[in-house]
Length: 219
Image (cartoon, rainbow, N blue to C red; front, side):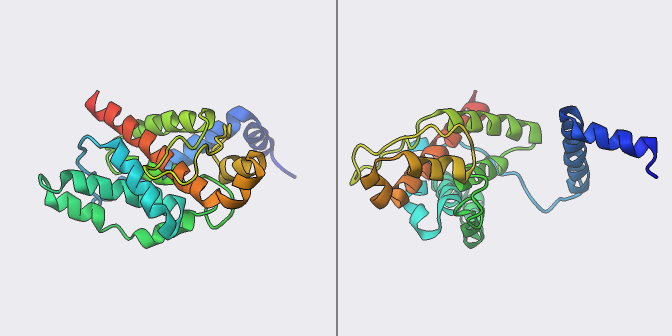
């Protein structure tokens, strides 16, 4: 027979408050375990050219998808920006094993979960944050933008897909954003422009992420 304490605990977890509290507990435990890690160094922030970040995210998308393109493009833009002033950190940014980030395509292994571009953007933000609360605040701003903005907003210099359909996803998963665009786009675009849409989407998310980072650190 189950004890009253076990039943009460289950009831608490079944409630919204209980789930939030349990989630906070897991998060805090994770921080406690990470507290002793000393190998990683937070990157030195410098003001980013958000247009360059978007451009390089767009260009790198084709090699490995949304997470790969978003994160690699941002890292290369950062490295290019600081090359003359801090070659050490530029080397670190270029030395990330980007091949691992191909997993983000299709909402991580085509599971249609968290948008890879969103994941790449938040990972990139994390490189500069001493305080996790700062990262969470910026992630919240980016998430609000991504859920409520008609995307993609990015248009490449040589626009071979003019008047691309844009879509407000009201969510942050690949299913919300990518599949949602496919289901609502005009038939011709749906058949021929899906890859281009995803590349522009990654660029759009990374441009906003760079702007949020600049605002956070530059005030």
